[in-house]
Length: 107
Image 1 (tube, rainbow, N blue to C red):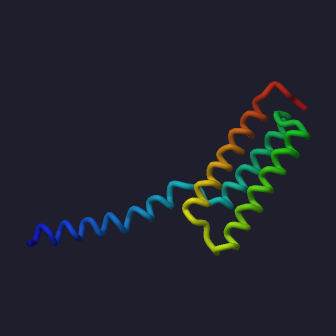
Image 2 (image 1 turned 60 degrees about the horizontal axis):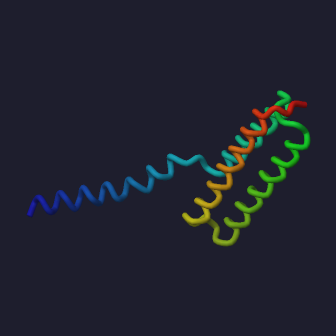
Image 3 (image 1 turned 60 degrees about the vertical axis):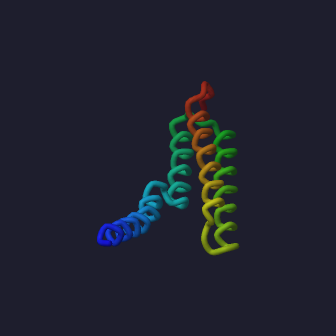
């Protein structure tokens, strides 16, 4: 009987800890937005990103920020599916910032 009691307590403790650990792994979206905007600015300042590329990247970043705000307004909080979709979009933008900053085009 004691074994079942301890097993139940252990599973409850693990179950309660897992959601909090999952939240620590991902950067909050607003912080990610600021970081990527800074990367675009830095790439433009150093000459790795042309003015045209900068405008396009900033436009995409603004669109993602707007979509995130809109998704939050609709329910107050992003659902897991919405957050995953936004994470994929931010990942794609991050890859594109890197590609534009390291391509052969210079200012």
